[in-house]
Length: 109
Image (cartoon, rainbow, N blue to C red; front, side):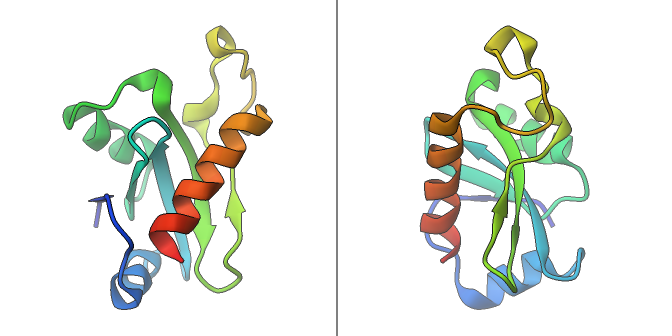
């Protein structure tokens, strides 16, 4: 399941998204459009779905959401971007992390 999510996710759908990884949902967030893609096996699949729907690469950041603990993480291979001052799998910018976190919470909680 790989869905683009633009509005608050119903609880049942959130549980479905988390089924594959036992409550963990891989997500790619478009921090400019304030939407996300979630539920795929790999981050690049979600990234591709958003790019096909008009998102820009520079606005896409990956991480995950644990449906049980409600915790967000900021770790994904797609975050390796030395040209955007992010030479790590983790999102290093506190500003981008905050935007990422706010969008995930708005759409999932």
